[in-house]
Length: 281
Image 1 (cartoon, rainbow, N blue to C red):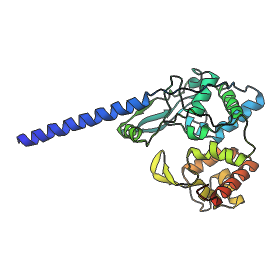
Image 2 (image 1 turned 90 degrees about the horizontal axis):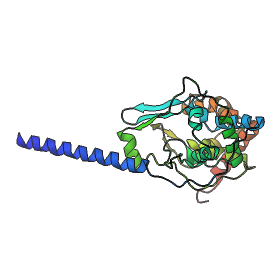
Image 3 (image 1 turned 120 degrees about the horizontal axis):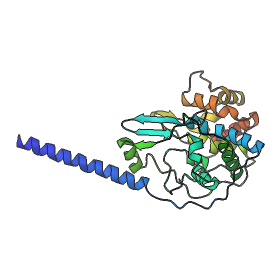
Image 4 (image 1 turned 90 degrees about the vertical axis):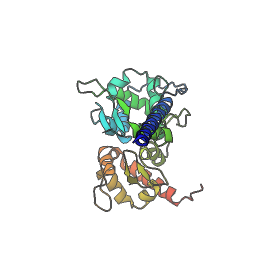
């Protein structure tokens, strides 16, 4: 019996050490501060700017994560991953200047210098200066509501392990890659600021919120549609198979349907070109 007790104590000790390492290591990553790049973005409060900012907010999925009325939404809540809640936009934005909001959106760096880990900054960092100004102008029109969600995030053991192993990487991107104005090449632009929040251009990958679901390579799946079928997909969420495409169906109906016919055609053309381009280019 003594060896059983000794084995149990060793096992308990190993678990305690492992949990302490997991928590301490992940906290070190979460508390790391990043140098925020200088930013001079000022909100566009013009009527046209606010209207376009609201459309951009739809296209890049702000309302998909933060709720259609921007009051916040719980994205994930379970014992292993923890609780990820997108906050009410108006209340969170009230604590940020325009420049700080721009750094949060495009660089993934919060006001205190720490990084976001959930928002798809890898896509948003392609947003042009003028579109960010329009987006912030729209955000400034939002008003706090009684049902606003504070947007708390707590990391469970699986999420902390993912943070340590790179499965849930920091979204801090201090480098500036966005243009001042929205590029003329609308197809490439909207693919980068919207579609690539979930997809990789050339590789299939697990869906972030459900690793059991595979997200196809964007260039491959987009080029498999003809122009009419692709437009129908982005307008209705119905693909060639006619089945429910899950998240893609919801995103198409709620967000991507705000793209104009010309923008959808440009996106489709760009995906065909990328599919035909050699992988080494």
